[in-house]
Image 1 (cartoon, rainbow over the protein chains, first blue to last red):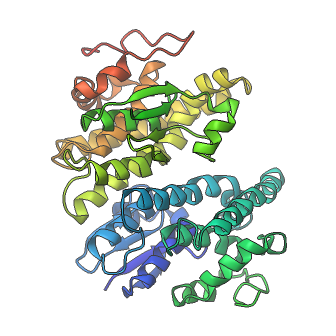
Image 2: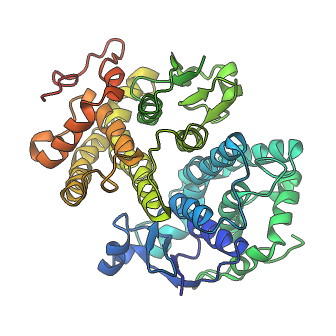
Length: 222
Length: 222
């Protein structure tokens, strides 16, 4: 059986979970407490990070971008990168935008400070980082709105991995109630379309032990 | 003509320069002082980062991974990702390792602190960051040695974008004399093979204005 090692609020792992579901590939989930640095897990991924995918043939894959590109190549029936060099470059540009730029400027400052530090016991949340995250998120929400004003989905007229990457990050922030939806109605409309996809269902059922989600987290009409 | 917007010691831009040269695609280089936030450049890449590639058809591409994947798809004659899902996943895992993990743990702590802060005038180098970078680099050099003990190149028996990504980062650190080659002879042998490739030549001729390279930077027998 295919197994994905993940953590509840890892945006990169959520991206892979949604991709697997969109491609209708069945998988088991295993929680990996990466901070315990389990030797068996480090043997799978020396970077010590989730997600790690064990595919049906026993092969081990790590790094969320490498996993998603692998799934596109090995299971191409339902494609999520679009067609043609330019369209695919635009999808990949936006994946990188959310997985690295948004992650550094927003996700790490909010989910990283409030949740990951508590889970791993590595200290108190830094209030300066939280303030920075709360300021930065507006810039990115404006960018989402700018894009969906001009296109049906983030990277173009087609649903793609760019939407999945962005929504994976926003879903972790939404869990802790840190997305200012009311200020960004265009982004909210786009996210509502994603939230209602069957591939999102399992994400919306996630519960971090001891940390219940925000009230509207699971609500499709938020 | 094809144009690459870059900065002298941007490892991500160097990766694209080497890929273009390996693929024998001619290009002009334009220095982009990203900290000036030139509106015409932000219109090309709202992330405000190099590299940005303007291809021969006028299309604009940004994010170094998206650019490299685009070049693989549009100019496939000389391939740098290998063949088959598993081999390509291993190449991409290692590209991400160097472009994000190594970048965060080493490049930013050394080149970022010593050079980028000086170029952009955003403050003094942080000596704690520099110490962290000097400690962390050994872990990564050990990993390079572990890999090339078992494989001809980093990702397998074939030269790939993984070697290019790793060497791009190390070349920026070598410019400032911060690679402890003597402690890592296996990594040094691997890097010497890369340094002698024609695609590396232009990189070795780079001069950052007012900051000459370390003595052995250009030397093939270092």
